[in-house]
Amino acid sequence: MKLLAIDTTEEACSAALLVDHEVLERFELAPKRHSELILPMMDGLLADAGLRLVELDCLAFARGPGSFTGVRIAASVAQGAAFGANLPVVPVSSLQALAQGAYREHGAMNVLSALDARMHEVYWAGWRLDSGSTMRLLGGEAVCAPELAVAPDGDDWTGVGSGWDTYAKVLLPRCNPAPNLRTGAMIHAQDVASVAATLFVEGAVVPAEQALPVYLRDQVAWAKQV
Image (cartoon, rainbow, N blue to C red; front, top):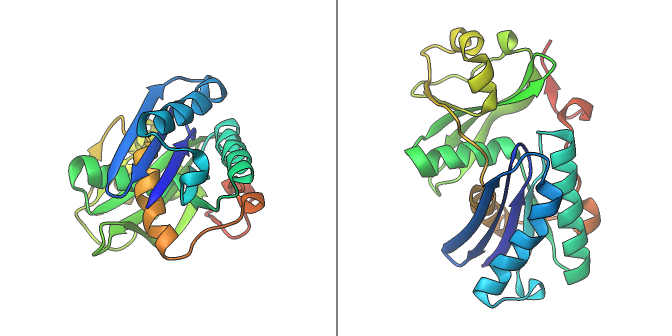
């Protein structure tokens, strides 16, 4: 398995190259510099590994929810690169990648991902680790006011993401028992790559023209809790 994954969801910009079970990542906290950094990151990883884009099995990107501009950049770059190299694309939920990172960094097996959606709302979802070490969605992903967030049944939760950093005092009473918070967590392309490797095997790939961003507020299929 050889895949290249990218993320420009929030303030950080990252790219990761997964070759079999080894992953290399370039990560930088660089608000408003995503379009400047992401292509050199991708090129640098391929050069370090002695690979060409056409030698990969697929591309992957964090397709949202997240910053409107950031999600558009990731989708556009993934589309363009996939067209040029004739590769399939694996779109990965940014909330899922955030949860996968909580498992990688802290061993968390039950995760409540929350991203600050601005306008006093959060992007919100619950995830549980499966037997193959991939985070799986519990229920659905939602955009809602933090005081309306609903935690799935269960306990031993870990809360990660900018939504918790901003609205912890409001979100904590929505969970019983209260989760263990990991502040400052950010999405990493290596976690996008980890999820994408599983999804690729499961056949969750799309052609380049269908590698589209997900703007949660505009998606009828996503639940907006009111």
